[in-house]
Image (cartoon, rainbow, N blue to C red; front, side):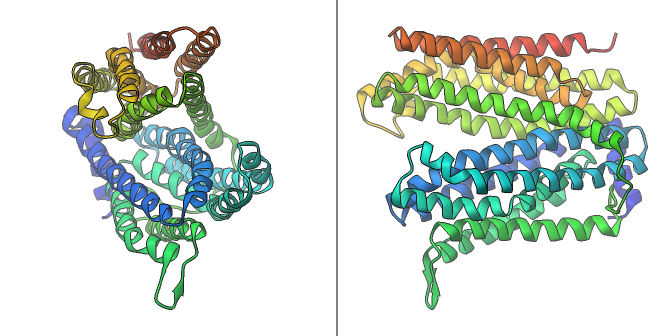
Length: 448
């Protein structure tokens, strides 16, 4: 693609019909997310062939891997996409390229920080979480590879975010799909071995993942160095202004991802006090969230680009129109899922368990949380719109409120031996506030 063709494609983001344009930016990302979920499930299956200690060791590391992914993609990556889309919307390609270079420098810094922190503190952290003997050995083997290559992960994710911000969604989608297809045979080969090739165990899972990121990074760098697309990667003098433009949105967004993770941990810990069956029921039911959030993230990436581009171009009414549409889509889509699960929770629960007590705990969660799913979907879409607007104080307040209400309320109720329903209600009220506070914040930021 020539640079002029890329500029014409980006111009369509500012002038094209909103819903079709949003779909064009969103669908490739959603396809990639579905493919990545499939690969993750398949990799978990191959690791399970190594035994219980391997599964437990990887399970201890995965939350940190997921945290790095959400921080680099939706957190700092959101700041990169937003800043570049605003620059492209204003027609300032030179600034967009400067932002791209500074995104590389930020990726190097955060990647090195994760590597040093986890490699030095990992043994103590995993031991504190209960890892002993073989489980600790397996956790350290997987963690050593995954976080030893943190810089690769951060570079790929921030470069991908930069491309999305410039309206180029097809290249990241192609890279991810090809990588997913290669990982399907590569992961079991490195984990279990074949013929004369010895299996590397959980280290093989980490190596396979890093090989994907290495290939993706090489592809991105070659493409961006050519300068034939919407962005051109080349060196720039270090400047505080591009860093502020990225981190002003990205750092607050990254804090938001941490608060979201803490919210999930808090409600899980409180439910765990009601016994294994309650925890299992909640765990099965809440898996719906782990499927819903990535799909909403896919939609949100398009929202960030369109809102930021319109804001940069001074098209504030268009930015507001995109925001309203995104909020409506998020609310209606999530609320629709919630209604189905309230009416027929067995559609989900019966797939995973035949235990009546487990089903009851999961059904109670759907009956309590299902009615507010729409507010979560709306709140998350408004969070992405706020990234595009470059105004993150409201979403940060919403995340803090959700954590405070959910964690504080659930912990107090669990300690008071209140019925499980009340613990679930604390989580539902926290979600409701998350949606309403985001709505109020974005409403205040609307053009008048």
